[in-house]
Length: 119
Image 1 (cartoon, rainbow, N blue to C red):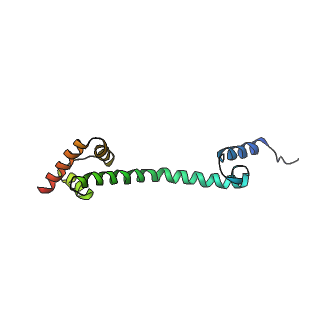
Image 2 (image 1 turned 180 degrees about the vertical axis):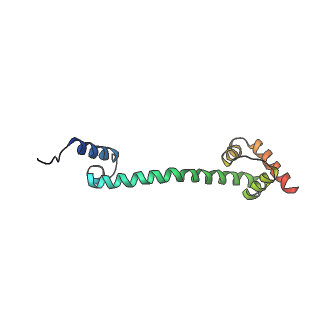
Image 3 (image 1 turned 120 degrees about the horizontal axis):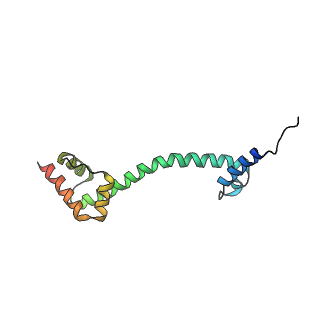
């Protein structure tokens, strides 16, 4: 029995890889062998970076909170310490939103932290 070399399963698999490599530069979008490596690497980076994105956002929030709290005369670490002592449980995302969008509410939170630090 002869060996099937141009079967539909094989063609479909190659088409799928080349479709994922659309937009890649040079031979990586048209040559199956190089496209396969590029797509594999790209998918692994995408998986890794979906996890890293969470940490990136946390860094941005901390930077924003630190800038706003320093404008109020308190560093980020002292603000967090004061909030813990005051028993205020607010996450960094919400705190950063307050710092940017609602400065009055952020000032009230900072005042609570400063009062807890004094006591």
